Length: 178
Image (cartoon, rainbow, N blue to C red):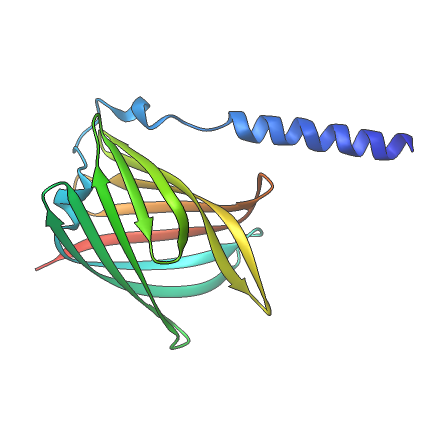
């Protein structure tokens, strides 16, 4: 009985610490080069990425070809994924620009509205995403950060967590194409 109480208390402390460990994107407000996702993704972009599990082992590698269109305050991203094993996938994001670097996003496979913010060279959003793992679907919390580099490349790091525990990471490098 005592060990169960200790285990539950330890888990509660861990979850509190994890929930307090988030960086506010506003911290990057004065940094350069300044990232505006509508400007960056307007047109053609290609990304190279990988998915790693909790131990750091690479589970999947992929490329993404993205067609971005801006219409007023709306950014639409048509993302076409090609995995190293030949599997393909598609996700379409629609972002609406708000005030103060805020964005509201929706995607074809993401439930609900995603609140996002950009400041300085950084962009951040968090959202639930159902992912097929083996024979079952698991809904992960995706904590998605993008950082614009001085050479124009954009680095994206996303943690995939469940109940506050990181179970995987996604890393991408974006490059605008002519």
